[in-house]
Length: 247
Image 1: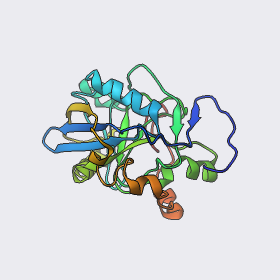
Image 2 (image 1 turned 90 degrees about the horizontal axis):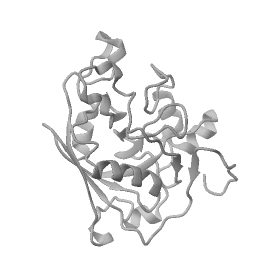
Image 3 (image 1 turned 90 degrees about the vertical axis):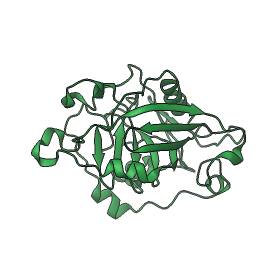
C-alpha cells in the first residue's frame, strides 16, 4: 500500500524498497512424474520470507514432501511435512516448527505463477507451506484484502519462470471432491517433490525475462486487481481453522 500510513503491527512487516544490488536466487523443484519447476525468489523485496524458504530447501526439508491441496484455476499447495505420513487428514496442518512474520511488498503480488506463503488466520503463522498461483489471484493481495475485509492478505515471495504449465497441471489434478468432503481438494494420487534446490545466477541478466530482476518487473507496477470477479471466486471460509492456506 504505497503512499498511505500504515500502523506498526506485531507479526507484520511492510517493505517498500527494492534492493537493486541483490541477485535473486532460483529454486529448482523436481516433481515426480511431472517435471521441473523453476522459481525466482524475490530476495530483493522479501528477504525474510525467501531466507526462511531457502534455509529449509538447503537443509533438504522439502525433499519427499507432496502437494496436498490442488484447486484448478486457483492454487497448487505443498510444503507440509505431514504429507510424508499415511494420514491425509492431517495434511495442511504441519510446518517446520518455526514461523515468520507476514512480509508484504507492494510489487510482490499474486500474478499468474506467483509463489506465496500459506498460513492460518494469524499473520505471523507462515512456516514451510507454500502455494503456486494458477492464474492471477489478486484477491489474495494484502492491499485488496485490507481494503475489502480489513484483514491481511498473503505474502508473495517469488514467481515461476519455468514450468508454469507443470504447476497448472498439478493444480488441475483430480482430487477427492465431494466423495470425501474433508479431503475435497486433496489429490487422489501422490504428487511428490523429489528435490528442491537453491542456486544463484552469476548475473542479473541470467534471470528469466519475467522475473523480479528483469527491467520490466522493476519498472512496471503490478497488474490492477480484478476485484469483483476474483473476490467472488475465492472461498472465504476455512474447513478447519488450523489448516493453513489461502482461503
